[in-house]
Length: 350
Image 1 (cartoon, rainbow, N blue to C red):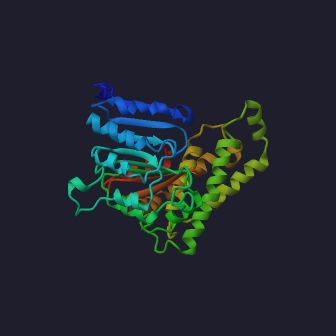
Image 2 (cartoon, rainbow, N blue to C red):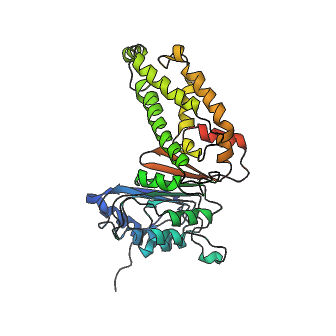
Image 3 (cartoon, rainbow, N blue to C red):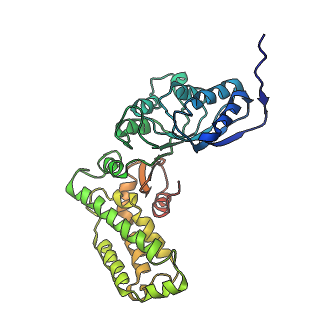
């Protein structure tokens, strides 16, 4: 008669965090023997091949089944295949899940996560999901073009989940993702034609402005500078005049009749201008000559009514945090106007 499998019962453990490499994958055997009835947060990360760790979803499923726990936050920072049926069985056993951070989910998977009013409650996967984070780790099994976001399925998922607050897309092809955002009317409701030349030109200008402002703020004037380097920048009139030209272009923009003004928000132009405005006197070289801080604040106030006009016409706000991370925030319909503005001019933290 075979001996019963050993088990480790930890009644009060609520969080489990595991990290492993290719050489230490055996640590996942713990999941076979653990019984954690109070577990609500599970975080697994590491550096290993997706095929080597293919049984991981099955082990997580076993852990949940034998523990009878209710996971609220599941994080898998590793290149696992989310097409496995065990992944969706895990979700079906986690109705209280609020934060899901996993590798890329394909079109079929996103549609499984889409809620429909005709579905019985028992058929709805993770109905209380508030944050969805997807990360691209490489070529999926079906050979799909690397890093492509399946926007049609994502749009349907977002539109049918009232409780969803944020979607994070990490390591996807930024150019492809940004084009799809800029040309989708759901995210740009006040633009009469999101494919118009005016809308696309503004999106392109926003990218140029972001690069200029970010470079000045992060490298030319503030970070990485010793007092001696800062003193040298104070004498670099070419650098100061370059920022002046960028500010003149921003000041000349009239958003009253521009399509797709949200491109300026997505590329963090308002945030960068606000940061420039809030700096102390003497930090920005040439400020005494060109009044960069004052002008940045004036541009923000000049644009504010038009930015809010467009931002409050939709619940959905995209921000491009950097070249590898884009965040979609779903705002409450009745959100206070000043709260919307504060989010627009603040740094978007993942």
